[in-house]
Length: 235
Length: 182
Image (cartoon, rainbow over all chains, first blue to last red; front, side, top):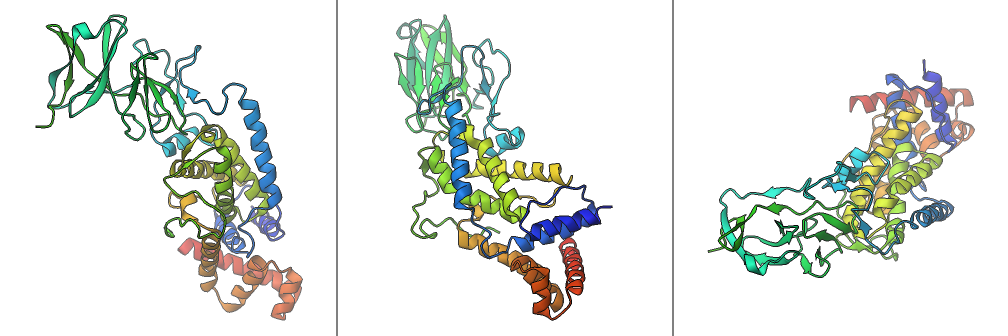
């Protein structure tokens, strides 16, 4: 029987106190909800006190100061660290928050080691694709990276450890075109300081939720040419 | 709800970041949203100590993901989602069931300004009161909205303190019935 609990809850509300907990039953819910709705209409209720705002600010500052020892604030967060490879799956903030509950920074989902370095990335296979040449084999030496623009798609093809890999050249966050930093073998987004490896993995980002890895293209080498499976270009 | 778009400048002289812009840093995220999160929580718990605690919980939880630059829309969506989980957790902890919830429509975007939030809260209360007999309306208005003591409310209504208590209890029960019927 919780009528007493509900009555005490309402009395606490009316005194502006923190209501004491009790096990509410179905019969209580409507009363408590009505009481809360009515209390929320108090004239000056909507504004937090100056003192609270300042105090919370200080607490947040403290917490940040503790955490910053790992990564300085201005530096984008590294996604891949030396001990663990983390892959990224979250694509929507709301989804990530719901999945993570109130505890946050669960946006990075560990999926164990991905040997290929492409784990989690989607492969773009167009329904009307064709093999299209993006570079002469001779122009793509070991360790080399070439940008390509086929009209319908843009991307980068890289030869790493003898293997070819082609990735989309569009940032998975909001679609800005990535720029190649050839020396660093890195693809940089001009918009929000996001960077991807030439293999498509996310390297760093300054967003609340990490963007997905870059989609991959099928890629092959034929008759001295490097080709990707891509849609036909604009006529 | 859908109480209209965010209007920068509508809140008075305070400079506000408009949607689509990016918060430069954590400070800006906090300054621009702490009032909103608090208002959201107050509307759902009806008391200051809990509203403060829940606001703190939201920001502490969201601190790490949001400490870097992000768009206003992303930040508010994230804070709203966090607020939803925090509120649900609070009710589970304290009463074992969710008395109030933040729906998908009730995010930080839907309370653009202090005045709009206040009129929203007033409108919701008025909706409850409107369905009640007049003496019930008056006791609830005096006690809950105007924060009168039982004694003051009894004097205002010209009834005994004991009867004022009974009246308040009955009025709230009837109001609860309206909530259920709605």
